[in-house]
Image 1 (cartoon, rainbow, N blue to C red):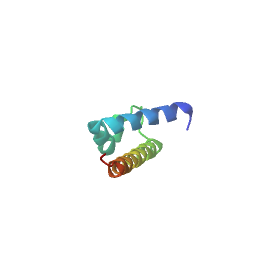
Image 2 (image 1 turned 45 degrees about the vertical axis):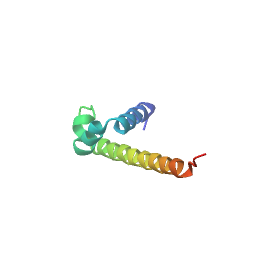
Image 3 (image 1 turned 180 degrees about the horizontal axis):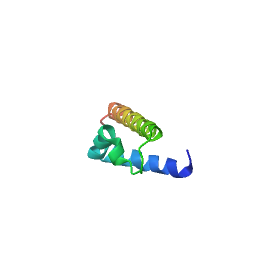
Image 4 (image 1 turned 90 degrees about the vertical axis):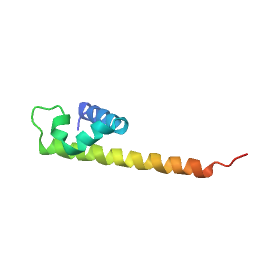
Length: 75
């Protein structure tokens, strides 16, 4: 994947993290979301990778938040 492809994936990841409606659309109708002339098997795999990365980031955020909340001790 070239630099342009990585940048597109980065933008998809960021948007999927902050926009729940976009994320749902990416999960249900990726061909409509990914702006390309022809939605290929490679595009499908890229979307699956993006969604997996988003899930991983969500999990990390949740773990970190849980750790911070559990580590807080009132003074």
